[in-house]
Length: 150
Image 1 (cartoon, one colour):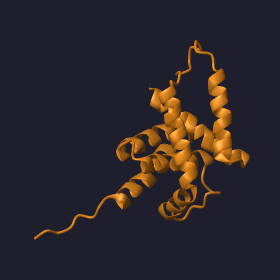
Image 2 (tube, helix red, strand yellow; image 1 turned 90 degrees about the vertical axis):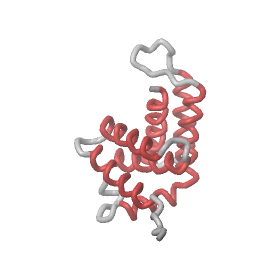
Image 3 (spheres, one colour; image 1 turned 135 degrees about the vertical axis):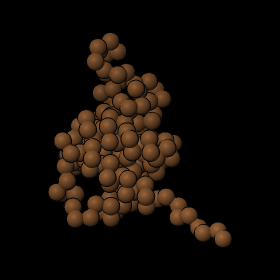
């Protein structure tokens, strides 16, 4: 449950940075300060432990370090759509998923499943299907080509 919440917080940092045209690490630092101020007994909040906050930070930093490459990958994967035409929610869920896949801490299929859940929670009616389709394409592209051994 806490890793799910960590992904949500990392997504929030990417989304806020995109909306506010600020560096993602600045948005992350603001969010991290807010996390430190959250009351521990808030009934509907999933508390994040130190390891979960560190995981969220690794995701944000992975995106920050690979932003140009991730956006280039997305441009190739989402043919016929510009980033301006896409919902910012979907775009940032996709960015986060590709950053998580690049980290290789989580199996890629798990990163895809978590991204689809994130899209369904925060995106529009078709966000889950859209994110799943784009990331399935990314998985197929990344899969090693089997060599014929005869």
